[in-house]
Length: 230
Image (spheres, helix red, strand yellow):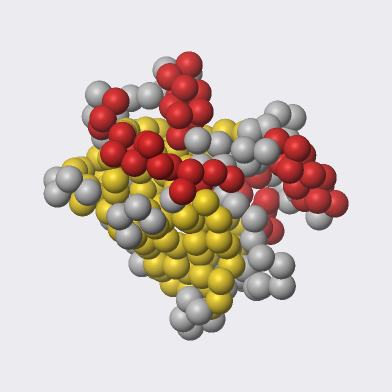
């Protein structure tokens, strides 16, 4: 299991042992837009889900706070997301942080659930208590930059208003008896800009709260593994 360590906006430092890791998918707040996106992906060979939004169980060890992601080939990429982390038994123990779901796109055409388990979910090392930002969640921005050597090209930019809210997912977790300490859930992502190469060597993702100018970020490099001997 992974152990995640966070510096919280209240000044506390918390440690969370991940017992359950879940990736939301097709999680736009407008499900009409989601259905259109499903059709676009189907044309690229990605299997269409039976239901939306989706929820994919991921091996807990793939929740990582790292500056490097090792990959097997050149067709992998991240996705800018938020994550909720259940750090304790009380409602105020739910944390909100930035995340990037690094996915194997070559494997994705064979099964989205498989692809989610072929790369890590990278999380930030800082977090807000969800209750402290609950009244302004929709205004919080989510941005991703990529590049070959530096993250100098904008790939994604939007607000949390574009995605299903954390409250939606906490109810899903509660209904499935998964809202317990150690659960981490990633939100699903926002659209990528056309014409930008997502198969990049460097990633940077930020959550920014315009009310306080506070920013939670993460960054990592992608490292290609050596070719196998077989």
